[in-house]
Structures are given as structure tokens and as C-alpha cells.
Length: 109
Image: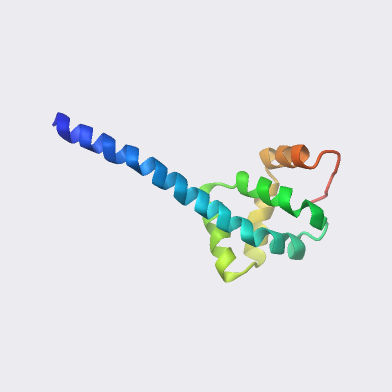
């Protein structure tokens, strides 16, 4: 029984790096759709701010949102993509990230 618990502990410990790599791959893929989404659905965001917006959006997205955005990177941006981005942008953590990344600039969303 002790050996089984030890084996299970080792297997679970090995899962963590795989999960982290998968999450990072999803976040990297999700970032590819955001400049187009910002340009089409958020024209009030100046092009020079696309990178900080992209970073803050992806950094504050939960796992299901990352998965959705990564899928949209394959199928293309649409209103669903914009709705996901809008929900992430509405969070105070995303607003704080944007305030730090683009200080002194208020972009109405």
C-alpha cells in the first residue's frame, strides 16, 4: 500500500510540468488572435498598445478562456472572441495590469 501511494505521488508530481507546459502553449497560441480582435472589435485601442493589452488579457484569462481564445486562433476571431476579451478586460486585475503597462493612458472600453 505504501508503495502504491509513493508511486501515485510520483505520477502526480510528473503531471505538474506537463500541465504548465500545456497552459503556456495555450497562452502563447491565444496571444496570436488578440491583435486582430483588438483591431476589429476594440478600435479605440491604439495599435501601439496591442502588445500590453494582449499580455494583460492573456495573463488574466482563466483556463477555459485561454482554451477558447486558442481555439479562436485557429478558426478566426468573431463576436464570441470579442465577448471573451471584453469579460477579461472588465476585471479589476486586468485593469490594474493595463494601468501598470500603459501608465497615464485611459482607453475607454
